[in-house]
Length: 105
Image (tube, rainbow, N blue to C red; front, top):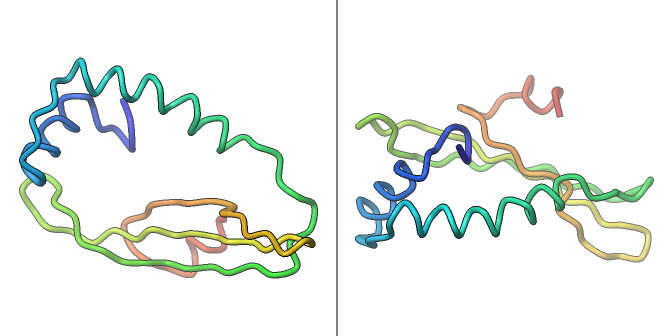
């Protein structure tokens, strides 16, 4: 299972419905098998102790879920380290934008 409960079949259906792309569940499985370890490595990478500048952002967008269109919010945190390099510190998805979600981060 990937991306909050999406199965290979869900991804296959999504690609076909939204983009008109036919990709078999086995192709999707091979792709995700290659990508998931890299995503996990990125999620667990060490971060700097200090980021003097931090930007917080939340973008609301509409997605199709169970034949309905619903809002989702993608939260992102970008930090600029002491050398001036930009780093995405994290990305999260929630059902809506709220101050309480930011506090949990």
